[in-house]
Amino acid sequence: MAKTKKQRGRKKFDYSKNRKRQWKKSKKKVKIGHRGVEAAWDDRKSVGQNLRDMGLSHDVNKTIPLPKTRDMMPKVYQDEGMEVDVSPPKKSKKAKKLHVMRQLEQEANTLQEGAPRLSSEMVRYCTYMMDKYGEDYVAMARDVKNYYQDTPKQIRRKITRFKSIPEQYQEYLKQKETAMTS
Image 1 (tube, rainbow, N blue to C red):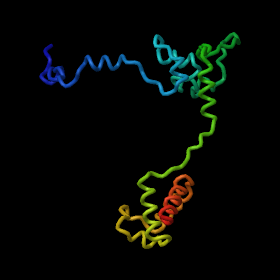
Image 2: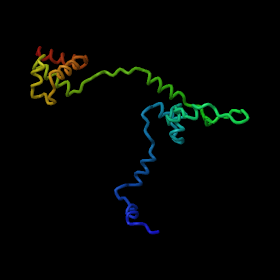
Image 3: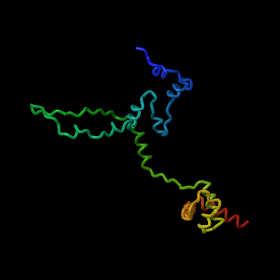
């Protein structure tokens, strides 16, 4: 049977796509963000096999399956009184590279203290307002440099946050002190 014009129209060559470049890109080695996983990775194995060897999960639904109705029901009895197990057989392979999993767990359990910092733009804004108006937040709200039209409460919150970050606030105080002495 002959194809319609609509069917033939879909089969046109797309000149805007470079198929060779796409193929090369798909064959490139995937960059992995963790050094331990990258060191243990074997390019000859699939993603699932690599992760299974490291003791990690490739498909969470298979790793932690939801209970099915047939698993929750009592086991089926045959006429002779023999018990038959209806659930599918479970496959389990031992992980070979468990050091990767332990390293990931250890990194996840360590507390990371992120030093809070404000952007340089926000520091300039706070220092300008403090230098010009001191503690008068209402006047700060009316200032021309209040581009975002912050309310006095919002400005107070920003300046309080700036003061709570010792690294940046101490640097501002030193600069202010040197400016006053000179």
